[in-house]
Image (cartoon, rainbow, N blue to C red; front, side):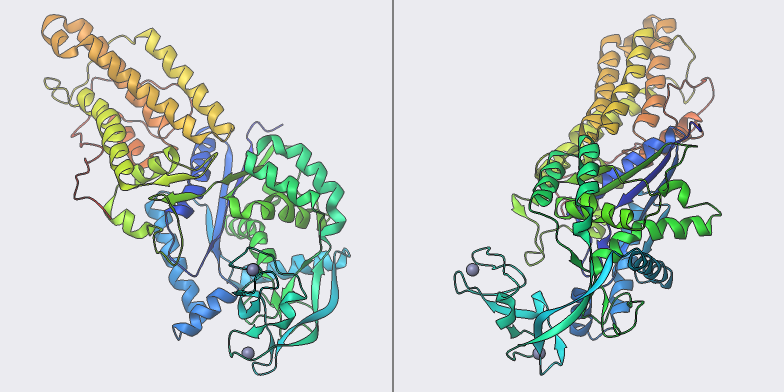
Length: 539
Ligand SMILES: [Zn+2]
Ligand SMILES: [Zn+2]
């Protein structure tokens, strides 16, 4: 068996109709931490995602702005790509669903499911607008709630949260033109999700130990409510065309094709890089496969139930995505992030103002892992100045820029106790990363920084420099070895600072084991790793 694991990391697809904000990033960032950790371990990692490009909200925005849907998608896609690049997210393939490649691969999958008997046409009454001459759906229909009488759009009452039944939606008003809708028979394709109850329960029992509580609870609830077949097509103009006759005026429903993007992005990458995509997605006797999915809690059942069902329905030997990492929500100043409030802190603006590593650190340290978390600028400032600058930055600075060294680090003897602590830190961080406790993993790295500072303070190298040069050399040597190992341990969390440290110390690439650096050479000019934030530094 190949000792190298194949690790596929799928990060949720961002929808291309508004700015990407901090609430998205806190759900994605842990995926990049995991990818960087596995790469440092020497595993074969592929991290994929893309821009979710189809559906009504995008066409609505296009009409409002007098643009084509393609132009809207391109604008946001470019923004997302820039944000990920500046944040140091290491996507091997970041694509979008509005590409001929994705469209073709989705159509192949649909035909395969049809061939296997899991896709069938179903005719049922639906709301039709005679004036617009089209079927209208949830957000296009205004409904009077039968429970409380409030006027609502969508599939749930905005006033009393009552979930509308199919018949409630039949007596609405078209929101596009204001006409009363009529009931007409409509034929759509459906996916036989109900057929997969048994294997999905087995998948749930097998995988739930890897999931967070939110995913376990929500998936169990969904399974217990009974699985219903799901519509695969919709009356849309912007999306993947249905590869079957008599569906020219419909498109593939976004939920199914965007989920399939995890597979098509892998295929795209592998095709362009002479790799076999099946290495990552098919069961193998040759190597171990790990598939991880990172997303927010509003997307849980798509990843724990619906996507596995699609993979099963192909009847191909897919590995199930067992590791689902579902983030809770991030609130801002105690409030839910909402588009109407515009309080989501657009990521591009944040990257213009703040250090990328520091934002990454904050996303993990303050990440909504087990419950919703809150973002305030006061917390961010405190964390940046208190943890990153005062502890980590200062330890590096006071060691490498010690006055009197003149840029030449002395050789000495490593403090064995410290060495044992460093080795122990690798194990602790690894265990926490592999248990999806990214926040704890970062705390473990910071504990080593604290230990370094404590060691430095206790040894008082500024006195030893004059009084005991041999001991001074040992202390500085030991501190430098701590820094060398911090460059590995921080690599998943703060890759830009880690790279700077490797450059100073002549380390070529990150690894996940104890490293020691040979000293005695001039290591050049040391720049401070981070700049302190002042009261004026707000968004
Ligand atoms: Zn109501
Ligand atoms: Zn209408």
